[in-house]
Image (cartoon, rainbow, N blue to C red):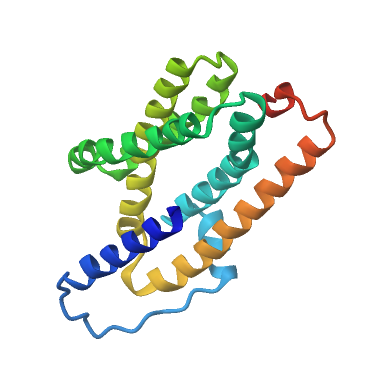
Length: 206
């Protein structure tokens, strides 16, 4: 049933996207950017430096991210319905917060929005150590959704603002590869550490 609903939603999304109009692209060649050249720009403080920050953040997130679900289901022993509502509250908060963050981005720019989101997501996972109370965790998930909305919107806007149009394809290709690699390495690193500890609630919190 879940996969069926997801399939229907994908079809609706595809239909909605096909209904959008698009201006004819300008005839301009896309330039290739080598890894060496990108490394030089990052080292010298180029505008692409925020990509390095995004990749490092992704590594940190996936260091602990995959272990929230088993912690909730195995150690907190939440019912599946409570688990779904707790997980979904983050996404609902994110959707509701995006238009408001869009106003902030228009007034203050995506750089400031990235600061807000980047700082906002830092304490969210650590606050899980404070309490297992469901009202507290729901509030925490909502706060997390609001912070992640700011971070992800700023990230998207900076892709268009900071990357040159003729280099965007090359740079985004390298970023996506590095981003996927950071997800894998972060998960492996977190998995290796938890593998050497007793599978207790304290291990997950650590």
